[in-house]
Length: 332
Ligand code: KPL
Image 1 (cartoon, rainbow, N blue to C red):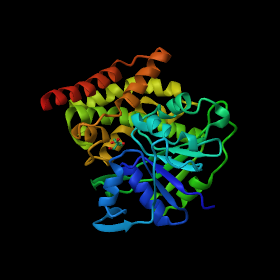
Image 2: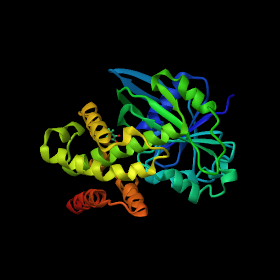
Image 3: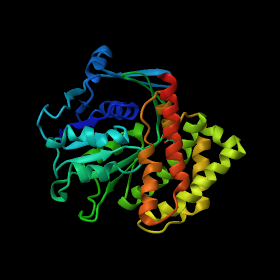
């Protein structure tokens, strides 16, 4: 009943989820510090997370804090939410893997696809002792103004679902962590079936494979993609190439994956998030590594495996990386 929920990865989303959980108050929340910079930042922030919604500041303290460095506490972790960047997921999990086993549940919240497969291959190769995997997609708009201060700028649901591999027994309907998340009104959690969450992940992959690299290359807000015939044409080109790849990855055929449905979806998200700076453009602007390898790079790998063309996705990977390399040259 009182097993804490551990949060690994304290970027915007990790802080938002941790804040929402402690606010809900029915389970202790433990923040896992896997970067040395986090402990001093936490002290400077007065050991609290501030969340600003519509100009109102909600400060929350009372979190437990543990250092995750591979040598920290050994107590088993029952519920783990991983909100790291996609490319940090396995290295962060390495630091707590001795505390995870088949009784643990991990909720993965990364953009793109690939981190779960990497975790299975590199960290939990034995299916018998592998934790239960859950995937989550959060559409809330959150950004940071200081290391432990976030602004909750847009409401959006959290969709979660159990990921069942071939060797797994059928998903149990819920577990304590998911039940708790679904109680948190602020997150508007929806629990999906395993095939529904896989579909949602693929839809999000298509959205991210179009909006993220184009906004990063053109350095524009999401909505600006809709105001140029050239950018619109590029969006359609990318969707048309990505459609066959994601359709081949679907567990069962679905009308929501026709080229037209995918174009409509991407345009609708660009419209709805028009004033957003995409996460990839934010990464480029902050000179951080992007998640392109887990978005368009993942599609290129799947296209190659399936014998489907992926030249536009390959071009996006190269352009985003070139954009960053040029920026680094300018700084040097
Ligand atoms: O998920 C996003 C991202 O920026 O990563 C979108 C939906 C494109 C919103 O900005």
